[in-house]
Length: 312
Image 1 (cartoon, helix red, strand yellow):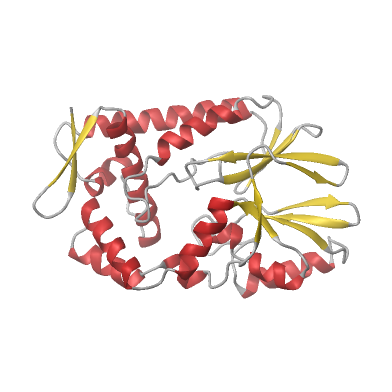
Image 2: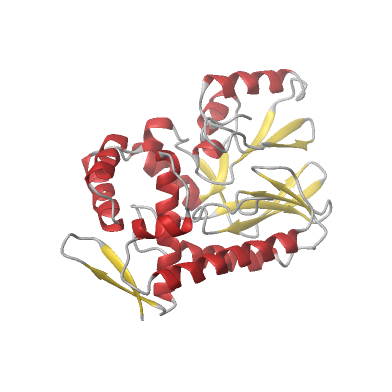
């Protein structure tokens, strides 16, 4: 399905479930995506109903049309508790308290007056796009076994990109539906956000990668973006190298006290649009926090409220 972002598509998956279908992820809530789904429902899905709605995580391109599906079919959204609650929270949290928390967070990251004006004008971008998250869900837990048609799919929870992303592993078919946890050619965004300003999501992400290494090296990986691929273990190794390189760059940059915003010029030496900027600053903070938790960096707050990181 198309996306209105630089990352211009999302892969959504259909699993035959007897005489019906299990849908994995939904797309963004816009008219184009709804119309495309209507065509798929009437065409490739042969008019057979949707029996299960499985959502990997709360991001708009994955959970965005969940409420539409639950109105259209007698299904309950199935996802992990953290993903459901996070989506519900962000879809509803549009008040002044959210704005103030965001301004304090990005001021601490080093945003100047012009960018803070952008933060204030942007508000809750999730809530502006996603008006409805289902009020009821069926909770998925790590290790749950889902019987879909003749096969069993095991829930594997990945962390870092999202709080509790539900990936699906089918041993019989040697197939992993990896969501955004494992992508073939880009590193999933791993960011610190205003709702959890002291988090260490990179530590969680790297730990999760080792969980997926337990799967067979020759399994087929079905990612949410990019083409399906083989070479799971090689991809995990590449992601680990990528982040080790980023961490080394970050540590070297902190020979003098710097802010997360200062680090952007080193981590992302190109012009960033406003959409990319918020992901980039979150990723910058993720690497800084990882090194702080590892005891390699210290953090101070200057007189302007900016968090500055330095080598210990």
